[in-house]
View 1 (cartoon, rainbow, N blue to C red):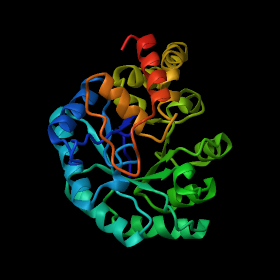
View 2 (cartoon, one colour):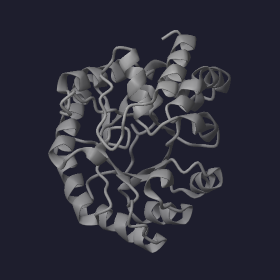
View 3 (spheres, rainbow, N blue to C red):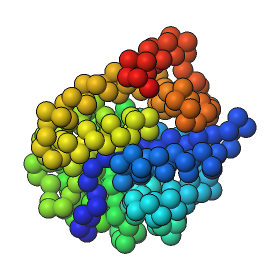
View 4 (cartoon, rainbow, N blue to C red):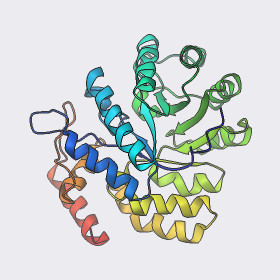
Length: 297
């Protein structure tokens, strides 16, 4: 599949919750609108940052539908998180996301099971064969899954299946990511899965970013990516170093807790998080407030 629109800054959307734990639909829709108006054209609901691990299937589908509704109205694209550590369940939910209007599925490496590379290949192969009409972005995040999708496995999947069109690489392993970029088939896209590695990875040939930081500062983050993709690295670096403290601080505790605190301080949403995650501690609050003050937010 040729996916011309899959380039640039994508936001791994937070899911705003009310105090009773329910999804706050009105706030979520406003946040999605803010992203698009801030220059983000790729929206990623129900990923790690969206706390999908603590949402049931009906909630995830509802969030995807809301994202699609706003995206269609404001001309953006939706890459919906559909992955799990259960191959059959992932296939079923990916089909549902497609029916809901998502443009692509973000499918995380199976967590907890710790499959071999052959197991990884079989898992993603089965999904790709079962949902042929749905473009698929692999999601490699070893810090969360306890397993790594190797460069060789990524490339095998990219070569064999036309609908495996991209990877979100959050391994932090530059050698592995460069190997994927060097040997990837035509039209296969590589996205940075870490805000901090975006500019260097784009300089090496990557196609964009799936961002946490864009939840808080979509204009700055999308502009940084745009400058890098246009080869204007002087301007990209200026933004990178300006927002670097926030990019780092978003992970001083388990994400998305720091991000949600910052968004609360900015008046964007409540800080409510689902267990087993909890709001950030007092020391982190002091640091995050200081960073916001330095940035003039």
